[in-house]
Length: 122
Image 1 (cartoon, one colour):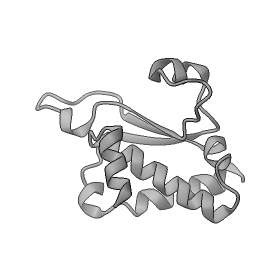
Image 2 (cartoon, helix red, strand yellow; image 1 turned 120 degrees about the horizontal axis):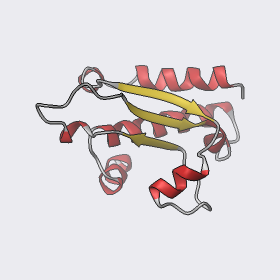
Image 3 (cartoon, one colour; image 1 turned 45 degrees about the vertical axis):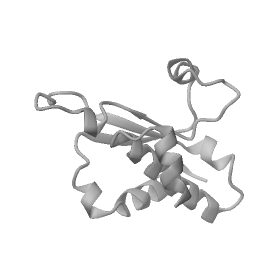
Image 4 (cartoon, rainbow, N blue to C red; image 1 turned 180 degrees about the vertical axis):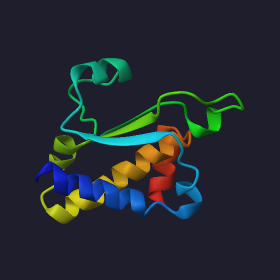
């Protein structure tokens, strides 16, 4: 899939975030890269045999105090080739992008992996 179409799926997922959460998104950039570089695995402590679909980097919303500000934006990176490697159809890619975007937005709000897994079960 070309990057433009994939980015359209990311934009669609972002536009579907409920308004009560969307209005709290502040100082956040969302980018698309092909796949995670080696240093990402080193920084996260994940095995290079695992596949990273998305990654949040920043100060979680719940940890921001009254002096938070004048910082570069938090970044959510969505890894296109990694997501595509799990999917067979365009519709599966769209759904997986939505799932990954929502998962990383959860990290933005300060949820950990265990909390996100519980929410994803609902």
